[in-house]
Length: 115
Image 1 (tube, one colour):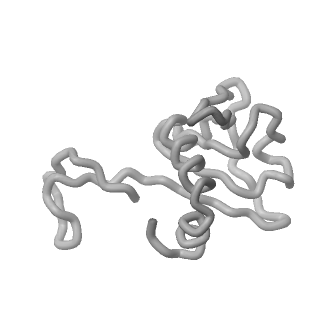
Image 2 (image 1 turned 135 degrees about the horizontal axis):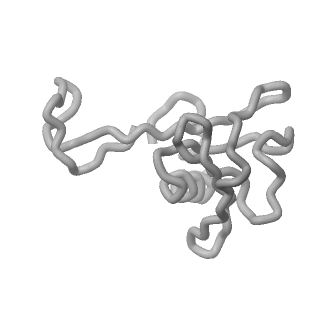
């Protein structure tokens, strides 16, 4: 979860007033893991600092970004092992880009740490 600066009326003891959590899911699949189903009609490639990331809407309304170019395999292809799901396609693509720019941060997050 990434805090934002919007006010949160239900701020708890570990969440300061003025912060709101945005859910971002970072996934790393291994052989045989199920990939999330996407609506193929919603695929849009998003550019982040000169790199293109395929994005699509998930069945639950979130967006997912995967791979790092427009010749990407489908999300359900076994070659696709890392993806990010977020409330917007731009947040998903931007988060994936940032994590791939910093492999140590990616490893820390996917190993249960915090970014």
